[in-house]
Length: 128
Image (tube, rainbow, N blue to C red):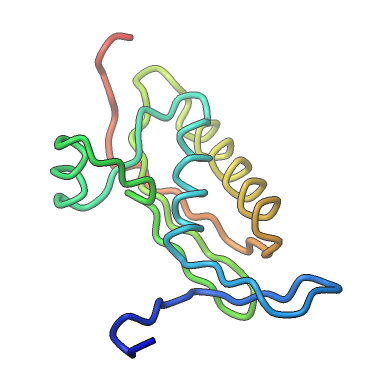
């Protein structure tokens, strides 16, 4: 495989009793975090860069939008940007997002989540 076609991986883990390794890209972990965050009650949607907003309007799903993941020594740090629905308690929604993201990443990857920072970047005031 040429150097330019070589995938870039965020973390490599070795499951017990297995030969070989498992490699998980940061984008995969970011997708897990994004999906888990949007499952929390009161979250309208994830917010990302303007390019991600345009991609979303074109119908292309970018599950990692609004999630930035850092992995070091098997420990995950997540930065999430979310838009909260009007009428919901921001502290309660933030705590629910942190809990759901931590649980999803740890159960799906086996990695330890050490930090989930939630940034409230907007409020959705549209009626459901």
